[in-house]
Length: 135
Image 1 (cartoon, rainbow, N blue to C red):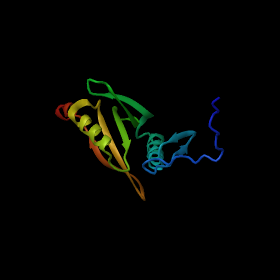
Image 2 (tube, rainbow, N blue to C red):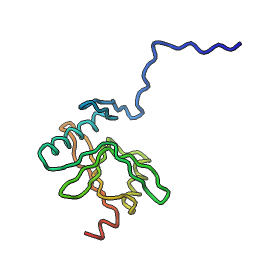
Image 3 (tube, rainbow, N blue to C red):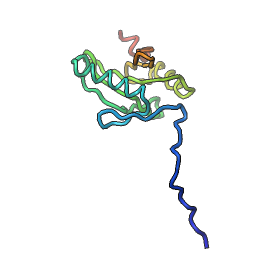
Image 4 (cartoon, rainbow, N blue to C red):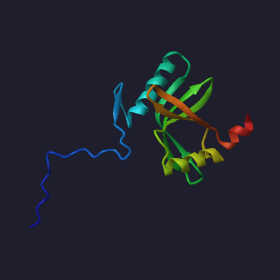
């Protein structure tokens, strides 16, 4: 007769592979403190009426293969839908998504944010080829 494995009561939480710490803001959980700080900054901008329609964990599809990409945020600024992504550092997967976005598969403007001791900063703005040609 087989017996189930005993369950340990002292399970340690597995650390995030990038040392990010889940952080709570306004009843919502973010994957990192940096992402939560960007949310704080965007909420401030929304309360100052600089942006509208702030959304978290926005899903877009890249390429004709419809690859799912979950972005951290989206918002509307001056009537234009903008996506925002917090990046503590670049990973190989991010480099692929970045190239796909710039190659025209991204549905619009993407702001890539970084974090410093003083808070979030805009690292770069990605616009798909189609958008660049329309400007």
